[in-house]
Length: 193
Image 1: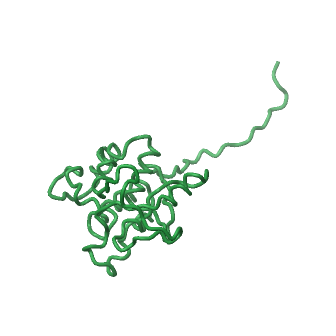
Image 2: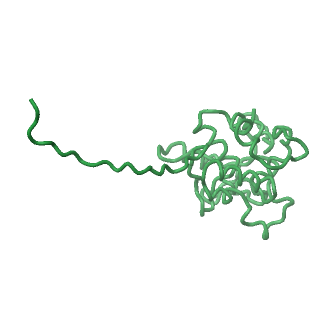
Image 3: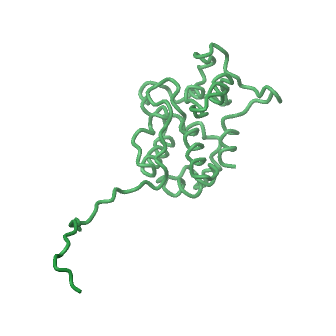
């Protein structure tokens, strides 16, 4: 038995759908841009690696190194441990890494995680400390709060900054348990090890 009335269905738009280009790495939001507690670039790399469920070493060696356009006396980023403070600084290493990360995450604001916007203001020498510094009160506050992310602010890398201005306490530079100081280089070894 044939239907005497044809049923009308909605029409479909068969034009080609434009799908936006996706980023190679997660478009992770940096913390604190525009504030004194802006995240450091090395801290951002650690969080980005964690978001991808890999170690920072895997992220750097399998994703970032192949996109960095220059070589710095060696193609092995891990042999450059003594220059690691430069990643948060104002030199070409910071610029190259920011350029690569911005292209892989499709972000345009990662330069604010370094001192690149201050290139004409700050000197290159004796700007960033050689030893790691931190505020345990900030870490404790962020840890206790369920909605805050634990990270490492760029300001803690400045050699001239010795106080946490939010807690009015000296920044720690020694482990309270073993009394050892951590070099910035050691922090990055932990990143890439």
